[in-house]
Image (cartoon, rainbow, N blue to C red):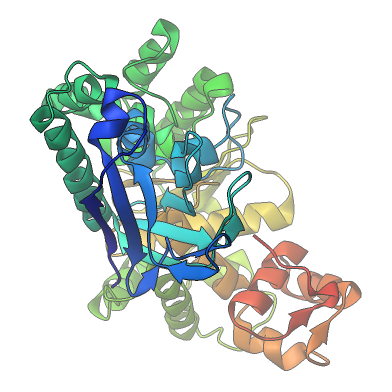
Length: 435
Protein backbone atom coordinates (compact mmCIF):
# COMPACT_ATOMS: atom_id res chain seq x y z
CA UNK A 1 0.00 0.00 0.00
CA UNK A 2 1.19 3.54 -0.78
CA UNK A 3 2.52 5.95 1.84
CA UNK A 4 2.43 9.70 2.36
CA UNK A 5 5.96 11.11 2.25
CA UNK A 6 6.69 14.71 3.21
CA UNK A 7 10.30 15.71 2.44
CA UNK A 8 11.93 19.10 2.94
CA UNK A 9 15.26 20.91 3.10
CA UNK A 10 15.74 24.14 5.01
CA UNK A 11 16.47 27.09 2.71
CA UNK A 12 17.64 30.70 2.97
CA UNK A 13 14.45 32.73 3.65
CA UNK A 14 15.67 35.75 1.71
CA UNK A 15 13.44 38.71 2.49
CA UNK A 16 10.66 36.74 4.20
CA UNK A 17 9.10 38.53 7.17
CA UNK A 18 8.12 36.98 10.48
CA UNK A 19 10.39 34.93 12.73
CA UNK A 20 8.39 31.71 12.32
CA UNK A 21 8.33 32.06 8.52
CA UNK A 22 12.05 32.82 8.24
CA UNK A 23 12.94 29.95 10.57
CA UNK A 24 10.97 27.39 8.56
CA UNK A 25 11.60 28.45 4.95
CA UNK A 26 12.03 25.25 2.98
CA UNK A 27 12.04 23.30 -0.25
CA UNK A 28 8.96 21.10 0.20
CA UNK A 29 8.19 17.90 -1.70
CA UNK A 30 5.12 15.76 -1.03
CA UNK A 31 4.60 12.34 -2.60
CA UNK A 32 1.92 9.65 -2.36
CA UNK A 33 3.60 6.42 -3.32
CA UNK A 34 5.55 7.16 -6.50
CA UNK A 35 3.39 10.14 -7.50
CA UNK A 36 4.89 13.55 -6.64
CA UNK A 37 1.96 15.73 -5.58
CA UNK A 38 4.04 18.94 -5.48
CA UNK A 39 5.32 18.65 -9.06
CA UNK A 40 4.86 22.09 -10.59
CA UNK A 41 5.39 23.87 -13.88
CA UNK A 42 7.04 27.25 -13.29
CA UNK A 43 5.82 29.55 -16.04
CA UNK A 44 8.48 32.21 -15.38
CA UNK A 45 11.41 29.91 -16.08
CA UNK A 46 9.48 27.49 -18.32
CA UNK A 47 10.53 24.39 -16.34
CA UNK A 48 9.10 21.58 -14.24
CA UNK A 49 10.33 20.82 -10.73
CA UNK A 50 9.18 18.36 -8.02
CA UNK A 51 8.98 20.82 -5.13
CA UNK A 52 7.78 24.24 -3.97
CA UNK A 53 9.60 26.82 -1.86
CA UNK A 54 7.46 27.82 1.10
CA UNK A 55 7.63 28.37 4.87
CA UNK A 56 6.55 25.20 6.68
CA UNK A 57 5.11 27.02 9.70
CA UNK A 58 1.66 27.68 8.11
CA UNK A 59 1.45 24.07 6.93
CA UNK A 60 2.28 22.63 10.35
CA UNK A 61 -0.05 25.09 12.09
CA UNK A 62 -2.93 24.10 9.77
CA UNK A 63 -2.29 20.40 10.48
CA UNK A 64 -2.24 20.94 14.24
CA UNK A 65 -5.27 23.28 14.27
CA UNK A 66 -7.31 20.66 12.40
CA UNK A 67 -5.61 17.63 13.99
CA UNK A 68 -8.63 15.87 15.47
CA UNK A 69 -10.90 16.37 12.46
CA UNK A 70 -8.12 15.69 9.97
CA UNK A 71 -7.60 12.18 11.38
CA UNK A 72 -11.16 11.31 12.40
CA UNK A 73 -13.84 13.12 10.37
CA UNK A 74 -15.20 11.37 7.29
CA UNK A 75 -17.16 13.34 4.69
CA UNK A 76 -20.83 13.07 5.68
CA UNK A 77 -23.50 14.61 3.40
CA UNK A 78 -26.15 15.13 6.10
CA UNK A 79 -23.98 17.12 8.48
CA UNK A 80 -24.71 20.86 8.64
CA UNK A 81 -21.57 22.47 10.04
CA UNK A 82 -20.90 26.16 9.47
CA UNK A 83 -17.45 25.70 7.94
CA UNK A 84 -17.07 23.42 4.91
CA UNK A 85 -15.31 20.07 5.11
CA UNK A 86 -12.39 20.96 2.75
CA UNK A 87 -11.15 23.70 5.10
CA UNK A 88 -10.30 20.99 7.62
CA UNK A 89 -9.01 18.41 5.14
CA UNK A 90 -7.51 20.06 2.06
CA UNK A 91 -3.92 21.24 2.21
CA UNK A 92 -4.61 24.16 -0.11
CA UNK A 93 -6.20 25.94 2.88
CA UNK A 94 -2.80 25.89 4.59
CA UNK A 95 -1.30 28.11 1.87
CA UNK A 96 -1.72 31.57 3.48
CA UNK A 97 -0.66 33.17 0.22
CA UNK A 98 1.99 30.61 -0.69
CA UNK A 99 1.78 27.88 -3.33
CA UNK A 100 0.25 24.66 -1.95
CA UNK A 101 -1.20 21.69 -3.86
CA UNK A 102 -4.83 20.55 -3.90
CA UNK A 103 -4.41 17.56 -1.57
CA UNK A 104 -7.37 16.25 0.41
CA UNK A 105 -7.17 13.72 3.26
CA UNK A 106 -10.50 12.03 4.04
CA UNK A 107 -10.48 9.48 6.90
CA UNK A 108 -12.78 6.47 6.49
CA UNK A 109 -11.97 4.56 9.66
CA UNK A 110 -8.75 2.57 9.51
CA UNK A 111 -7.89 4.16 6.17
CA UNK A 112 -7.56 7.61 4.63
CA UNK A 113 -8.83 8.34 1.13
CA UNK A 114 -6.20 10.68 -0.33
CA UNK A 115 -6.90 12.66 -3.50
CA UNK A 116 -4.81 15.25 -5.34
CA UNK A 117 -5.68 17.39 -8.36
CA UNK A 118 -3.91 19.56 -10.89
CA UNK A 119 -4.43 23.30 -10.31
CA UNK A 120 -3.09 26.72 -11.18
CA UNK A 121 -2.20 28.99 -8.26
CA UNK A 122 -3.95 32.34 -8.50
CA UNK A 123 -1.56 35.26 -8.59
CA UNK A 124 1.48 33.02 -9.05
CA UNK A 125 3.11 31.61 -12.15
CA UNK A 126 2.86 28.01 -10.93
CA UNK A 127 0.75 25.07 -12.04
CA UNK A 128 0.53 21.85 -10.04
CA UNK A 129 0.57 19.07 -12.61
CA UNK A 130 -0.31 15.81 -10.91
CA UNK A 131 -3.70 14.23 -10.17
CA UNK A 132 -4.53 10.93 -8.55
CA UNK A 133 -6.09 9.04 -5.69
CA UNK A 134 -4.89 6.43 -3.18
CA UNK A 135 -6.08 4.63 -0.07
CA UNK A 136 -3.55 4.86 2.77
CA UNK A 137 -3.67 3.43 6.27
CA UNK A 138 -4.64 5.90 8.97
CA UNK A 139 -1.66 4.81 11.06
CA UNK A 140 0.77 5.62 8.26
CA UNK A 141 -0.79 9.05 7.60
CA UNK A 142 -0.76 9.90 11.31
CA UNK A 143 2.90 8.93 11.53
CA UNK A 144 3.85 11.07 8.51
CA UNK A 145 2.01 14.12 9.85
CA UNK A 146 3.42 13.65 13.35
CA UNK A 147 7.00 13.43 12.08
CA UNK A 148 6.48 16.54 9.95
CA UNK A 149 5.06 18.65 12.78
CA UNK A 150 7.73 17.41 15.21
CA UNK A 151 10.40 18.52 12.74
CA UNK A 152 8.90 22.00 12.30
CA UNK A 153 8.51 22.49 16.06
CA UNK A 154 12.11 21.32 16.62
CA UNK A 155 13.26 23.81 13.96
CA UNK A 156 11.46 26.66 15.73
CA UNK A 157 13.01 25.65 19.05
CA UNK A 158 16.46 25.41 17.48
CA UNK A 159 16.13 28.86 15.89
CA UNK A 160 15.07 30.44 19.18
CA UNK A 161 11.45 31.00 18.16
CA UNK A 162 9.04 30.25 21.02
CA UNK A 163 5.49 30.87 22.19
CA UNK A 164 3.87 30.38 18.78
CA UNK A 165 0.29 29.00 18.50
CA UNK A 166 1.75 25.95 16.75
CA UNK A 167 4.06 25.08 19.63
CA UNK A 168 1.38 25.66 22.26
CA UNK A 169 -1.29 23.65 20.41
CA UNK A 170 1.08 20.76 19.67
CA UNK A 171 2.08 20.63 23.31
CA UNK A 172 -1.61 20.57 24.33
CA UNK A 173 -2.27 17.65 21.96
CA UNK A 174 0.61 15.69 23.49
CA UNK A 175 -0.68 16.42 27.00
CA UNK A 176 -4.18 14.99 26.39
CA UNK A 177 -5.03 12.27 28.93
CA UNK A 178 -6.62 8.93 27.99
CA UNK A 179 -10.07 10.13 29.12
CA UNK A 180 -9.67 13.42 27.26
CA UNK A 181 -8.50 11.53 24.18
CA UNK A 182 -11.90 9.86 23.78
CA UNK A 183 -13.61 13.26 23.94
CA UNK A 184 -11.14 14.80 21.47
CA UNK A 185 -11.63 11.99 18.96
CA UNK A 186 -15.43 12.22 19.30
CA UNK A 187 -15.36 15.98 18.70
CA UNK A 188 -12.95 15.56 15.79
CA UNK A 189 -15.15 12.87 14.23
CA UNK A 190 -17.90 15.50 14.16
CA UNK A 191 -15.57 18.04 12.56
CA UNK A 192 -15.20 20.08 15.75
CA UNK A 193 -12.14 21.40 17.57
CA UNK A 194 -12.19 19.92 21.09
CA UNK A 195 -10.02 22.79 22.35
CA UNK A 196 -12.50 25.40 21.08
CA UNK A 197 -15.99 24.05 21.56
CA UNK A 198 -19.24 25.47 22.97
CA UNK A 199 -20.14 24.21 26.44
CA UNK A 200 -23.52 22.92 25.25
CA UNK A 201 -21.91 20.93 22.45
CA UNK A 202 -19.32 19.55 24.86
CA UNK A 203 -22.14 18.43 27.17
CA UNK A 204 -23.89 16.74 24.23
CA UNK A 205 -20.74 14.82 23.32
CA UNK A 206 -20.31 13.75 26.94
CA UNK A 207 -23.93 12.55 27.04
CA UNK A 208 -23.42 10.49 23.86
CA UNK A 209 -20.37 8.89 25.46
CA UNK A 210 -22.87 6.93 27.57
CA UNK A 211 -23.81 4.95 24.45
CA UNK A 212 -22.43 1.41 24.30
CA UNK A 213 -18.78 1.74 23.30
CA UNK A 214 -19.34 -0.28 20.12
CA UNK A 215 -21.76 2.39 18.85
CA UNK A 216 -19.93 5.55 19.76
CA UNK A 217 -17.64 5.84 16.74
CA UNK A 218 -20.51 5.05 14.35
CA UNK A 219 -22.77 7.57 16.07
CA UNK A 220 -20.28 10.45 16.02
CA UNK A 221 -19.47 9.77 12.34
CA UNK A 222 -22.97 10.89 11.29
CA UNK A 223 -24.23 12.94 14.22
CA UNK A 224 -25.44 16.39 13.22
CA UNK A 225 -24.80 19.09 15.85
CA UNK A 226 -28.06 20.79 14.82
CA UNK A 227 -30.12 17.66 15.57
CA UNK A 228 -27.81 15.96 18.03
CA UNK A 229 -30.23 15.29 20.89
CA UNK A 230 -33.00 13.98 18.63
CA UNK A 231 -30.56 11.62 16.90
CA UNK A 232 -29.17 10.40 20.23
CA UNK A 233 -32.68 9.73 21.54
CA UNK A 234 -33.51 7.77 18.37
CA UNK A 235 -30.40 5.59 18.71
CA UNK A 236 -31.14 4.93 22.38
CA UNK A 237 -34.71 3.92 21.54
CA UNK A 238 -33.45 1.59 18.82
CA UNK A 239 -31.04 -0.09 21.23
CA UNK A 240 -33.86 -0.66 23.72
CA UNK A 241 -36.24 -1.96 21.07
CA UNK A 242 -33.72 -4.31 19.44
CA UNK A 243 -32.32 -5.86 22.58
CA UNK A 244 -35.78 -6.35 24.14
CA UNK A 245 -37.04 -8.65 21.34
CA UNK A 246 -37.29 -12.40 21.89
CA UNK A 247 -37.37 -13.71 18.32
CA UNK A 248 -35.16 -16.64 17.33
CA UNK A 249 -33.36 -17.00 13.99
CA UNK A 250 -31.40 -20.27 14.33
CA UNK A 251 -30.94 -20.78 10.60
CA UNK A 252 -29.32 -17.37 10.17
CA UNK A 253 -27.05 -18.08 13.13
CA UNK A 254 -25.93 -21.30 11.44
CA UNK A 255 -25.34 -19.51 8.13
CA UNK A 256 -23.27 -16.87 9.92
CA UNK A 257 -20.99 -19.53 11.40
CA UNK A 258 -20.55 -21.15 8.00
CA UNK A 259 -19.82 -17.86 6.21
CA UNK A 260 -17.34 -16.80 8.88
CA UNK A 261 -15.34 -19.96 8.29
CA UNK A 262 -14.47 -18.52 4.87
CA UNK A 263 -14.11 -14.88 5.96
CA UNK A 264 -12.25 -12.68 3.46
CA UNK A 265 -10.46 -10.41 5.93
CA UNK A 266 -7.77 -9.50 3.37
CA UNK A 267 -10.28 -7.73 1.11
CA UNK A 268 -11.13 -4.03 1.28
CA UNK A 269 -14.51 -3.26 2.95
CA UNK A 270 -16.61 -2.99 -0.20
CA UNK A 271 -15.10 -6.04 -1.88
CA UNK A 272 -15.74 -7.94 1.30
CA UNK A 273 -19.37 -6.80 1.22
CA UNK A 274 -19.80 -7.93 -2.39
CA UNK A 275 -18.22 -11.31 -1.65
CA UNK A 276 -20.33 -11.93 1.45
CA UNK A 277 -23.55 -11.09 -0.43
CA UNK A 278 -22.70 -13.52 -3.22
CA UNK A 279 -21.90 -16.30 -0.74
CA UNK A 280 -25.10 -15.64 1.21
CA UNK A 281 -27.21 -15.93 -1.95
CA UNK A 282 -25.63 -19.32 -2.60
CA UNK A 283 -26.32 -20.46 0.97
CA UNK A 284 -29.93 -19.30 0.76
CA UNK A 285 -30.43 -20.91 -2.66
CA UNK A 286 -31.45 -17.64 -4.32
CA UNK A 287 -28.47 -17.08 -6.62
CA UNK A 288 -30.65 -16.49 -9.68
CA UNK A 289 -33.59 -14.76 -7.97
CA UNK A 290 -34.10 -11.18 -9.11
CA UNK A 291 -36.63 -9.73 -6.68
CA UNK A 292 -35.52 -11.23 -3.41
CA UNK A 293 -38.09 -11.29 -0.59
CA UNK A 294 -37.58 -10.85 3.13
CA UNK A 295 -38.83 -14.43 3.50
CA UNK A 296 -35.94 -15.56 1.28
CA UNK A 297 -33.40 -13.93 3.61
CA UNK A 298 -34.43 -15.96 6.64
CA UNK A 299 -33.43 -19.31 5.21
CA UNK A 300 -36.58 -20.72 6.78
CA UNK A 301 -36.61 -18.34 9.76
CA UNK A 302 -39.16 -15.56 10.04
CA UNK A 303 -36.88 -12.72 8.95
CA UNK A 304 -39.82 -10.29 8.78
CA UNK A 305 -40.35 -10.63 12.54
CA UNK A 306 -36.84 -9.33 13.15
CA UNK A 307 -37.45 -6.05 11.29
CA UNK A 308 -38.96 -3.24 13.34
CA UNK A 309 -39.68 0.30 12.21
CA UNK A 310 -38.73 3.20 14.45
CA UNK A 311 -39.64 6.42 12.57
CA UNK A 312 -37.45 9.51 12.63
CA UNK A 313 -37.62 12.79 10.74
CA UNK A 314 -33.85 13.27 10.94
CA UNK A 315 -31.66 11.67 8.32
CA UNK A 316 -28.16 10.41 8.97
CA UNK A 317 -29.00 7.08 10.60
CA UNK A 318 -30.99 4.48 8.66
CA UNK A 319 -30.97 1.37 10.85
CA UNK A 320 -29.55 -0.36 13.90
CA UNK A 321 -28.73 -4.03 14.40
CA UNK A 322 -28.87 -5.45 17.91
CA UNK A 323 -28.52 -8.94 19.34
CA UNK A 324 -31.36 -9.94 21.68
CA UNK A 325 -31.42 -12.18 24.75
CA UNK A 326 -31.68 -15.28 22.53
CA UNK A 327 -28.56 -14.36 20.58
CA UNK A 328 -30.57 -13.57 17.45
CA UNK A 329 -30.39 -10.30 15.51
CA UNK A 330 -33.06 -7.62 15.32
CA UNK A 331 -33.05 -4.87 12.71
CA UNK A 332 -34.59 -1.49 13.54
CA UNK A 333 -35.13 0.67 10.45
CA UNK A 334 -36.09 4.32 10.08
CA UNK A 335 -37.88 4.50 6.74
CA UNK A 336 -41.36 3.18 5.99
CA UNK A 337 -40.82 3.37 2.21
CA UNK A 338 -40.47 -0.20 0.93
CA UNK A 339 -37.32 0.11 -1.21
CA UNK A 340 -35.52 2.14 1.47
CA UNK A 341 -36.68 -0.26 4.17
CA UNK A 342 -35.42 -3.28 2.22
CA UNK A 343 -32.04 -1.67 1.57
CA UNK A 344 -31.60 -0.49 5.18
CA UNK A 345 -32.55 -3.91 6.57
CA UNK A 346 -30.04 -5.62 4.29
CA UNK A 347 -27.32 -3.16 5.27
CA UNK A 348 -28.07 -4.01 8.91
CA UNK A 349 -28.00 -7.72 8.04
CA UNK A 350 -24.39 -7.27 6.89
CA UNK A 351 -23.40 -5.97 10.31
CA UNK A 352 -24.72 -9.27 11.72
CA UNK A 353 -22.82 -11.47 9.25
CA UNK A 354 -19.60 -9.46 9.21
CA UNK A 355 -17.01 -11.40 11.24
CA UNK A 356 -15.77 -8.10 12.68
CA UNK A 357 -19.26 -7.09 13.79
CA UNK A 358 -20.30 -6.43 17.37
CA UNK A 359 -23.55 -7.01 19.23
CA UNK A 360 -24.69 -3.53 18.25
CA UNK A 361 -24.11 -1.65 14.98
CA UNK A 362 -25.45 1.49 13.35
CA UNK A 363 -26.21 1.91 9.65
CA UNK A 364 -25.62 5.50 8.59
CA UNK A 365 -24.87 7.85 5.70
CA UNK A 366 -21.18 8.06 6.64
CA UNK A 367 -18.66 6.94 3.97
CA UNK A 368 -16.61 5.05 6.58
CA UNK A 369 -15.12 1.61 5.97
CA UNK A 370 -17.89 -0.25 7.80
CA UNK A 371 -20.65 1.69 6.01
CA UNK A 372 -19.03 1.12 2.62
CA UNK A 373 -19.03 -2.59 3.38
CA UNK A 374 -22.70 -2.77 4.32
CA UNK A 375 -23.78 -0.64 1.35
CA UNK A 376 -21.88 -2.90 -1.06
CA UNK A 377 -23.39 -5.97 0.59
CA UNK A 378 -26.97 -4.70 0.39
CA UNK A 379 -26.59 -3.62 -3.24
CA UNK A 380 -25.11 -6.96 -4.32
CA UNK A 381 -27.62 -8.96 -2.28
CA UNK A 382 -30.69 -7.17 -3.65
CA UNK A 383 -29.44 -6.34 -7.16
CA UNK A 384 -26.53 -8.68 -8.05
CA UNK A 385 -24.16 -7.29 -10.66
CA UNK A 386 -24.27 -10.54 -12.63
CA UNK A 387 -28.08 -10.42 -12.92
CA UNK A 388 -28.07 -6.72 -13.83
CA UNK A 389 -25.50 -7.41 -16.53
CA UNK A 390 -27.70 -10.14 -17.99
CA UNK A 391 -30.62 -7.69 -18.22
CA UNK A 392 -28.81 -4.78 -19.88
CA UNK A 393 -29.75 -4.05 -23.48
CA UNK A 394 -26.37 -2.53 -24.36
CA UNK A 395 -23.33 -0.68 -23.10
CA UNK A 396 -25.14 2.67 -22.62
CA UNK A 397 -27.88 2.55 -19.95
CA UNK A 398 -30.70 5.05 -20.34
CA UNK A 399 -32.75 6.47 -17.47
CA UNK A 400 -35.81 4.48 -18.50
CA UNK A 401 -33.83 1.25 -18.40
CA UNK A 402 -32.55 2.04 -14.91
CA UNK A 403 -36.13 2.65 -13.78
CA UNK A 404 -37.17 -0.72 -15.19
CA UNK A 405 -34.25 -2.50 -13.50
CA UNK A 406 -34.94 -0.77 -10.17
CA UNK A 407 -38.56 -1.98 -10.27
CA UNK A 408 -37.49 -5.45 -11.29
CA UNK A 409 -35.07 -5.84 -8.35
CA UNK A 410 -37.09 -3.83 -5.82
CA UNK A 411 -34.42 -1.21 -5.19
CA UNK A 412 -33.90 2.47 -5.96
CA UNK A 413 -32.49 3.67 -9.28
CA UNK A 414 -29.51 4.97 -7.31
CA UNK A 415 -28.60 1.42 -6.25
CA UNK A 416 -28.85 0.18 -9.84
CA UNK A 417 -26.71 3.07 -11.10
CA UNK A 418 -24.04 2.40 -8.48
CA UNK A 419 -23.95 -1.29 -9.35
CA UNK A 420 -23.51 -0.46 -13.03
CA UNK A 421 -20.69 1.98 -12.31
CA UNK A 422 -18.91 0.10 -9.55
CA UNK A 423 -18.85 -3.18 -11.49
CA UNK A 424 -18.13 -1.50 -14.84
CA UNK A 425 -21.23 -2.99 -16.46
CA UNK A 426 -21.84 -0.07 -18.82
CA UNK A 427 -22.01 3.70 -19.18
CA UNK A 428 -24.82 5.79 -17.72
CA UNK A 429 -26.57 7.89 -20.35
CA UNK A 430 -25.06 11.37 -20.54
CA UNK A 431 -21.88 10.10 -18.82
CA UNK A 432 -23.26 11.25 -15.49
CA UNK A 433 -21.06 10.04 -12.67
CA UNK A 434 -22.26 9.34 -9.18
CA UNK A 435 -20.26 10.48 -6.16
